[in-house]
Image 1 (tube, helix red, strand yellow):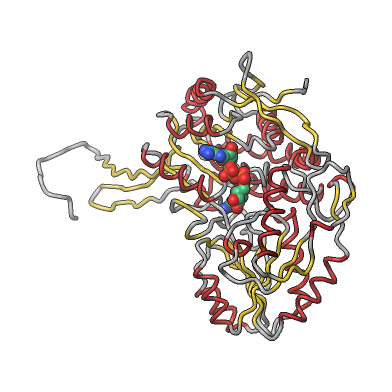
Image 2 (cartoon, rainbow, N blue to C red):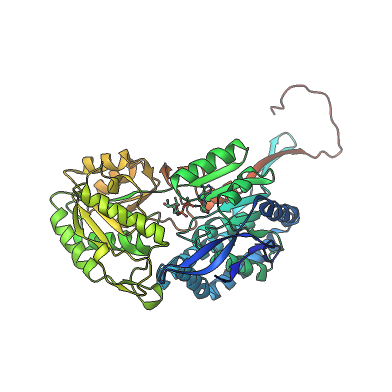
Length: 497
Ligand code: NAD
């Protein structure tokens, strides 16, 4: 098969070694191989990191005014070409065009936040902290920062990190998912067009070999990883053992707790949007709906009504939900549907029976709803990452919160209620990093930080917002004395006055 091949992006242009190992990139709506992508060998990663290390010092020394000009220009270019990036995402990930555009816009918001870097990097200054001694703080870049991203947000997740790392004066090596790699190259090209010096952002494509080369490279100062929990844990353990600063965001199982006093129409809309948007391939998707009795029957009836109107099909045709990312992933999700049914859950809507607006060979599975799911079933326990919503019935608020808190994941959760006191208790009691109150997908805006608890994040620092600025810089405190006329004197004690 003779397919076009996506190359790495280094020093402001595409580059690939003569005969690289390659991976297939599918169009999930047709099931066909759309292109191939170069998969970096360790030596290729060496070259990419060397380019970034070479570019980093001059970029770190570039004034805030000049860095900000590049950021503003990048923001304008990305905004102008958002539809182009979205089309690439739909063509490789499968999510519908409006949703692909939405993720570009959420990423763009981080670039907008990073435009305020002169303010964000301001240190503090204490005049005359001791007699004639001034003390002040600086934050300085780390050097070369690696960003390793998952398939489900090929633009937004890289943009959680890249603009802030660059704004802070670092050089970045981005390793996107090999399943949908094209958006990363276009975004890198826009940075070059915005005036970013060559080498400050390089993109290296690849799989485990490329990731391992980054985790073990002595010139890589930090790793920002987003992906499944086992790989996040591996990345965290390997890179911290190598002395790197690491934030490794993992998988999720997000619960939506519906109390009896909730607006059930609002809750049903939210469950459908958050359960089936992007075919459930969102780390903040709702996959477990916890209904506090007696609402389950009425809520499920409303959800079924809404599911009946959903159109699954090719994301370029104005459908509501697209295909799954690969055939292997679709088969894995389908196997979970069979397992849930075998385990005794009520299969209320079976997505395997769906009709699909698209090619017969697309990676289809329709929205699927289970009722009477119990915590020991694999459809509850595991992150399925597909359009499968499980209803768990509980008798009380306390039982619902206990279930959520017993779950090893802690990315996002939501409560639906009209009782402010219950919502307030929930925000304090849930052991989860991002809480929605009558909001099913509480992804924080760019100037707050995104991150989960427990098995959903390894490391301390969340993504973007001020925590992002903190992650991509390290602090320094300067104690200075300028005397006129200069004089010294011997005193072996700490200065106290
Ligand atoms: P993944 O873990 O398979 O891949 C993530 C990255 O790791 C990719 O760049 C991939 O090339 C690389 N990788 C894969 N296998 C590897 C290995 N054995 N060793 C080293 N690197 C490896 O995840 P995915 O399937 O691309 O993305 C979906 C997962 O990401 C879900 O679990 C989802 O919850 C999670 N996710 C989490 C967040 C969050 O913010 N917590 C956001 C988006 C996605």
